[in-house]
Amino acid sequence: MKQCVYCDQDKPDAEFSFEHIWPDSLGGDFLPSFWQTDDVCARCNNLCGLFVDGAFIRSFAGMAEKVADADRYQSLTSPRAAPLAYMGRITAVPAPAGCVAEMWLGACGANIIHIRPQHDETWNGYVSGDPKAKKAAAGRVYIALTSKEVFWANVALKSFLAHFKRSERFLINGAVQAAPGEPPIIASLDRNTAPPGDLAVIDAVLAAGRSGAFMKNEVLVKTNPADRFLPKLGIALGYKLFGAPFLDTAYGQVLRRALWERDDAVRETLPVVGVGYFAPESRGLFGDMLKWPAGWVLLVKRQKDGVMLSVVTPSGRGMQGLISDEPSLVAGLSPDHDEGTVWITVPPLLQAVGPIGFPEYLAHKLGTMSSPSLSAIEAQLIDPTTLPLCR
Image (tube, rainbow, N blue to C red; front, side, top):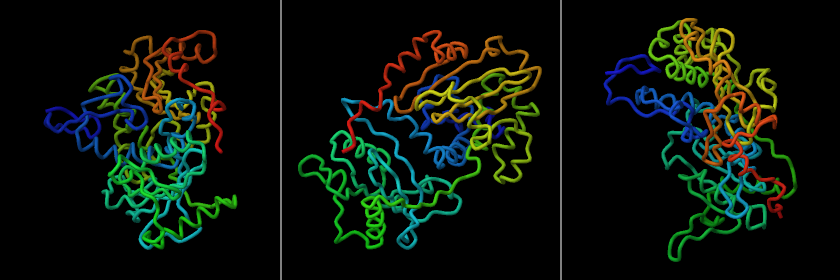
């Protein structure tokens, strides 16, 4: 038997699973063991993946962060899949009955239309709806390439295939063949057999693109998509830093209540200390000094009488959450925590750096000292203006 750090229940060892404290899809796989734990039960792991991590990752904000600066790591010789930009629900023309039509943009503005079944209201605010939806509910997705440049066609198609793995996939202006005798990887759109409702949406999007008209879409934005995400991180990191005694502290219990409280209004009354994603000070919390191209910067530092987690997003927004202010615990930390420790994970590269001292990170960013590990990541940056033109 052991205690789950998230739900605080004692459960058999067999009911525990490996947990990425920092989510896998935001680069958690590449971080060292400090950001991983096996002290979370499988039930909490699944619930947090869906309703806590997922609420942030699959929000409009989370999707926008994935796109920020991702092209800085594109390969000039071997085009890589790139994140798609989510543009919201298409409202200019009705979606087929019982369905939602969503628009995405790929490389060089490739038009992508995803038509899927309408999901439960629980998933409002989640891009593409219910993340648990089976393949039958994954819908149909169509792409129209907008560049004749082979490089960008490759990027757009690789990105399309990587993002929409379960949906029926169609290329509006062509087809992508597999090996001879095999069905196409992406079928060509056949207007004679395609659902009429799908064609109405497709034609509206293509007409707007040809005319240069702005297509007004609907985006469902959650007020603070990280309002349970930050407390989850605080609990896991508090346990990593202080062990089991942290879980029984007054603030540790506040974080647990914030993690599991589903009512937004009630959760806002809890004395959680931090700065959320859409807080007014989020944009100016660190300026651009600490951000890393397409990377998530994670800083753990003792500040006054507490230990804080600071997160700098790829776009430069700042989020902060208090981990602990328990004097008996905070006082026992090593002096290294006064300076702070930084990790950077860069999902487009499938690489991470850290732990490194915060002064080292600052010195590298200011150009007063070169950090070998950071320089190795920087060496893979490219100047986006050297990429082929969108023709």
